[in-house]
Image (cartoon, rainbow, N blue to C red):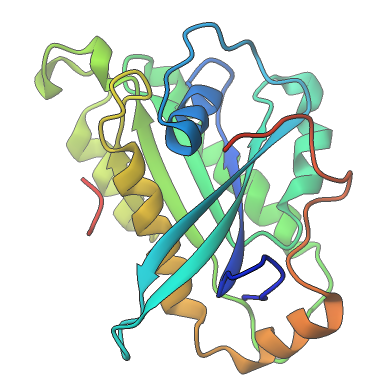
Length: 228
C-alpha cells in the first residue's frame, strides 16, 4: 500500500475524511496539520487537500519510519456527494467524523460508511490480494461538553459501533486539539502495520507510480498509542 513518492518518506498514505457538513472536518485537519484552530472555517466546496509528515515505529525492527499523509477533506453537503465519491479511489484510510452534540450526524455515519464501501466495490481488481484499509471513527467538538456524560452521543454507543465495524475510535476537539494528533498518529501506525508486508500491493504501486491524489488533481486547498 506504500510508495516512496515523497522525498525521504518511507510510505505515502491517502486518507479521505467524510461526514456531515458542520461536524468540524476542516477545523480538525487544520488543527492537525498546522497546530492552530481556525474559528472561521466555511463549508468545504468539493474538496480540500492537506499534507502532514508523521513518524511511526516498525513493530518488527523498532526502526522509525516516515509516513507522508495525504489528507482529503470532502464536502458534507448533498450536492457535492458525486464529487466526493471520486476521491475514495485508491484510498488507504477513511476518517468518518460526527459531532458528539448532534445525534443526527452520528446516525448518518452508517450511510457514509455504506457509500464508501459501495464506491470501493466498483473499483476494478488491482492485484492478487485485496489491500487493507483502515477506518477511524471520530467524535468531534468535545469542547462543547462539560463532561462525557453530557455528550448527546453516548461514548459507549459510538465505541460499540466502531468495534462492530472494525474501526479505530477517538474523541477529539479541533478547538482545544484534544486527541487530534493522537488519532491521526494511530491511524498512520495502523495503516503501516497492516500493509508493510503486502508485496503484491507494493509491486502494483511501483507500476502505478504511487498513491493516487484523486480523480481531479490536488484539490482546492492545503496545509501544513491507541485512540481514546
